[in-house]
Image 1 (spheres, rainbow, N blue to C red):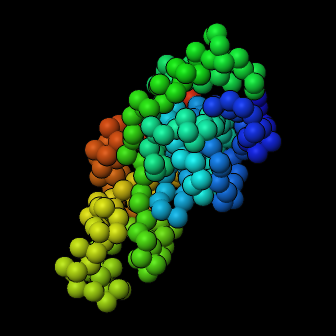
Image 2 (image 1 turned 45 degrees about the vertical axis):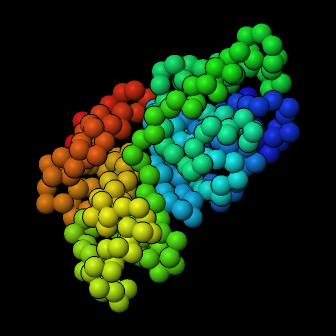
Image 3 (image 1 turned 90 degrees about the horizontal axis):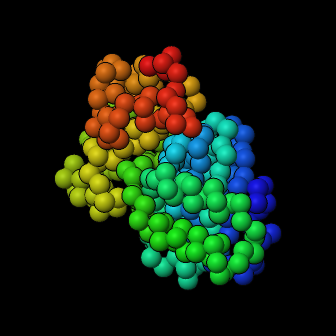
Length: 265
């Protein structure tokens, strides 16, 4: 089924409901939650998912898992053809308890395509039931990808982190942040790791890289994005990007399996 809201079919007596929906570039989905867990995947466009606990960026050909009941909002960069599997809570007990960006294998992608072609109330016996059972088996095996950014629970620190995401700068320092909070460098370092699970330097780098992905997907050049983040040159940014994600920006953000135009270098 396509372009049907989950609320209209949430009552369906099946452990998995497969829905497709198309979104135009720039679409923003306001904060909401689902009773079921949701596994999103898509071949084109990029999705920025936000919750009170962090931000997740889903490039093309990847997926994102949202546990049942988690309040989230989403922003689309580029035209997004979204495929969603909505999972009953009792059928999702082996899935992560937090949002995760995951790799979508070719096999899983084919399974999702097949699931979307099934009737809403598919037969539990026979091919349809076996296919959906296989979907569940494959879901728990999906690889978690490093595309998340945790937010602290402390109100003041959380506000600083969210402000940083609006205008990230790779050169901001521990001294800048500790002074703003009236803390010593040592106390701030311990506090930041306790709140986020990351060192300040690691969090700052991840924030810069994740903020770069939507800009690159929207068509900004690597040079413009790198300079905007405070990198001395595009090479320094590309090196950091490859170290974090295993590929240069163009290769990593291939749309629909094809590289972004070389003009984005």
